Image 1: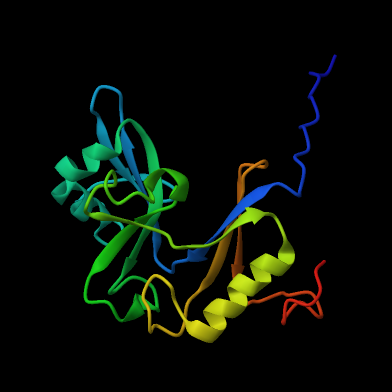
Image 2: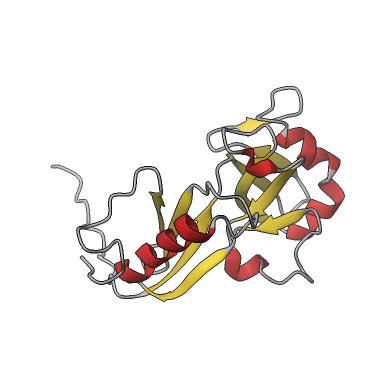
Length: 185
C-alpha cells in the first residue's frame, strides 16, 4: 500500500508580509551551535577561508567574536559590495546584511559588523504595495546605498507561508496597469 501523503495546509494570502530591498551579492550563512560551534556557509554549502565564496568565510572568521553575539542558530544574509557581482554599489568594502529584519533591526543588539536588509514595506500582502516599492527603487535608487541608482529589486517575505519571493527591476513582470500602483492583480 502506498504511503499516505497529507496535503499541505494552504496559508491565507492576505496576511503580513515584509518587503525588503534585494541586494545583489552572494548568500551567506553563519551557523552557531548550542555548544559554540561556528560554521560559515554559502547558499548551498559550508565554506572555509581556504574554500571560500567571495571572501565571506575569511570575513566571518575575522569577525567571529562579534558574530557569536548572533547566538545559536542559522543566520542568513547577503554578502555584497565591492567586487561581488556586477553592481558593487560603488562601495569600497563588502558588507553582510542579515535577512531577519524583525530580529536584527535594533542596532543595540546586532553585531557591529552586520547590517540588515532595508525594509521598504511591512503590512498586509498587497501587490500594489509591492509594486510601489519597486517603483520607489526605480525612481529614487537604493535604500541600502543612497545615491546608487541601479538597485536590483525587492524580496517579499510572506509571514504566513514562511516563504520568500523576489521581484527584480530588470525583469519586472508587473501586471498591466500596476506600474503606477493604480490596479492590482
